[in-house]
Image 1 (tube, rainbow over the protein chains, first blue to last red):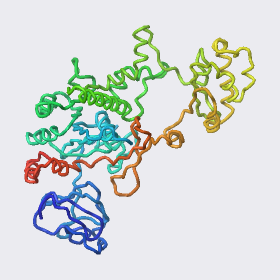
Image 2: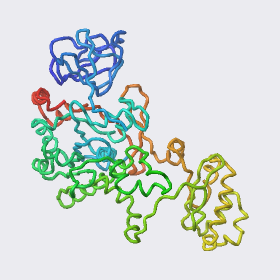
Image 3: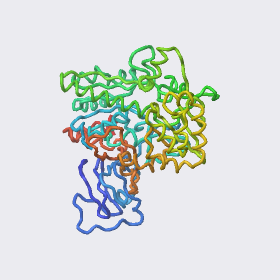
Image 4: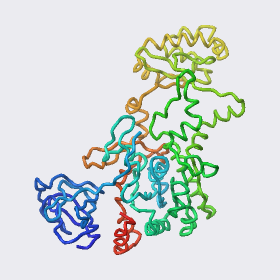
Length: 96
Length: 409
């Protein structure tokens, strides 16, 4: 998988840009993602239905994979069945 | 809305509200605004947990959205030489460099005017500061609560002497939002000047200068007369010399403000509207000079009249009155103000939470060609790093190399 590639979900509307990747199957809604959109789009499996958010980055614990969501959907992202986590900014806490 | 800044690229290296608000105005006007954020922490504004006792939702963060809608975010660590290299690449493509980092940080991280002009001599370099780019405190930072509100004399003048202490600013980012618009105005002038002469200028606006200007009518009067005036205590009634100037309490505790500085031709109409037409025939109020002479008596009549009916009645009933007046509204009232809404003051963007529930924000004060503003939500931190760099023709290998070194995210 080449970084910069765009992948489409087979289970929902999600599309991601691959920023960083290693060996493994990139999935959304529990189904492998591909460069082409399948003709019949399924539904996310119950374990991977938390949804993706536009503009968020999703990473694995080892930091091997990083996916940038460019179109949100109802499925959530995983690699080889292990859920990816949102890579959020860690801003310094502030309050009025 | 007509995109008067279309084709202008703004490179924003700024945090919090004041200077980002200038970027937001320029983005509203059609500029391509690229916001540089720290690759791990992002803009510290994202870290605001509470505002006025209200907990903020990080995915529907109104305090971040207000000054950052319509922009793209690129994550760069400007403390690294590679990060500075990326910034310079971006600066080469920009018309305006916009920053509120302190001079010593701009020097340390090499993005002060001489560093940016070295790669792009034609760039307009705009600084928003706390207290100004000159003087013994140019290295000191600040917020609108400190510089715009407190140090400036604004809090003092706003607060009646009888209160035990000065009023707080009360509205988050009040001075920031005003000052941000001033910066955007300055940048517009600088762009026009560059267009006409080819000269790139440096632009400075401080939060303190924004307050100087906003208070300029009174500061000038103080300089001229040496008399320092302050807000009076709230009361129901007209001013000492003009009964048609002042706040009047309604039967349910609301307030109607009258502001007829020049009452000629308004005396009869005003008395009729407040339900005391007989006062218009009273010889004490037969013309403006008599009205001024008998201000106290006229004020007493108005106080009694306004206390007969509730706020909602006056808010609707006075719409046909000729003189200048206003209901003293809350922001919740404002949201039901037909006239305010008719001028497209509220804009809708997508929420970052994917719920589909639109996030409502306020447009900038300037409208072009009477058209509503359409824009997008504020970016996620570093949302557009790869997109922007690839757009500039930077190869993926280079992007990966910068990523690996931590220069970008």
